[in-house]
Length: 138
Figure 1 (cartoon, rainbow, N blue to C red):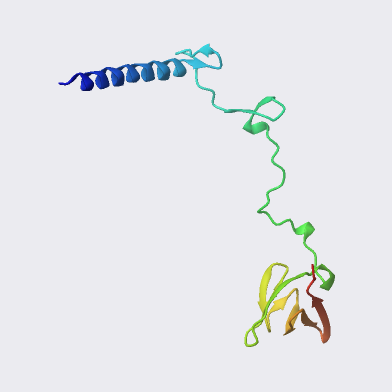
Figure 2 (tube, rainbow, N blue to C red; figure 1 turned 90 degrees about the horizontal axis):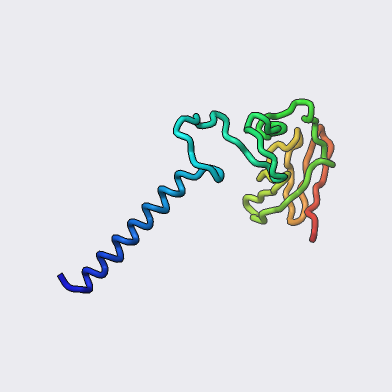
């Protein structure tokens, strides 16, 4: 075996020994003190808030579920609650984006029927009454 190979093996062996020493010393330290073999692992993981307070997941106040529809907040939307977000100009099949939903001629939006899609506006009809949504120019 050449001297270059021996040096490579010695350096690699020293590196492995140092790595093992670092791993063992890191595993034996828990929050600045040695790990007790008899101390049980905590069943509830601790969390630290931005203010540095320690608590548990059970004490976190999550607020309302964003996926749960709250019936008390549901109301009928009228024309004033609707926004025309965009229009796709295609003479054969025009589409409009109303309240971030893509609609075409004949589609229903809040009990209103899309009867006309123009270059800069959409005409909706409800109970024989026509409503016009205009595209906002920025």
